[in-house]
Length: 86
Image 1 (cartoon, helix red, strand yellow):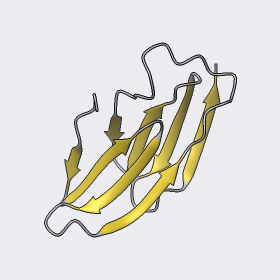
Image 2: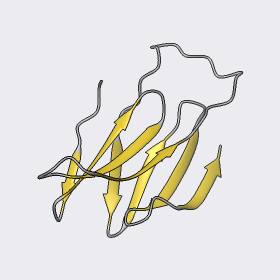
Image 3: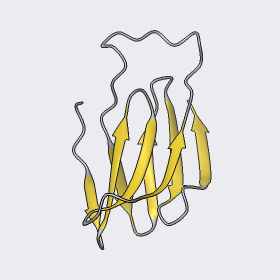
Image 4: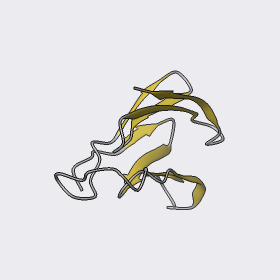
């Protein structure tokens, strides 16, 4: 993996290839929620099934997908708030 997990208020947010987000209790490892984004089948994977991780602002997580989309998710629930296509 090429991503560093984020830890905010005891919740760890991390990613798994290619574009899955996992929110878990940083102390116990209990999973709160997961979100799996499936990239377009036409996506050209130059460097394999990797991602660069997440960013967070307030209660919003941001993920850039392998097929050039930007997702914004509610950090508390994993619900998609916005999907921007380039």
